Image (tube, rainbow, N blue to C red; front, side, top):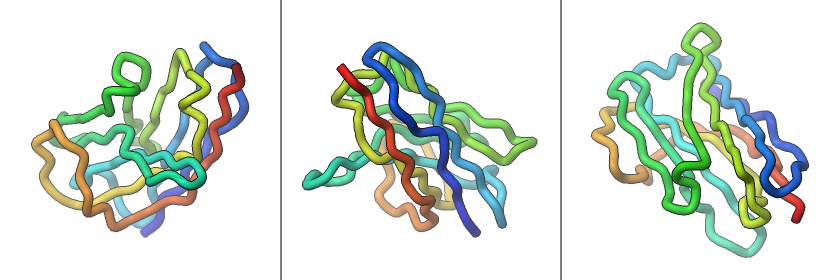
Length: 124
């Protein structure tokens, strides 16, 4: 059971990136998938999460209207589309998953499957 995050890079402020989170060994159907980000010397921050099967989601206030979650079930991959990026979005982004029902409206704290991080750097 693994997650593989990719798609990070360097982009100018106002630009866009799409991060991918590919699963192996399981399917996303019964899982809640979340994205985190972390900068040095700061706590890891929940960015967004959703349940594909429930159709429920949550976005941090700092990324609402700019970040969008989507999925490609055929590829067993979840995407985090990021647009209008700001320098304060610079961080290492990681994806995680936990099996279960998700009603939406909050960010779970019990993720137990983790992918490695991918660096996103937004220049001003």
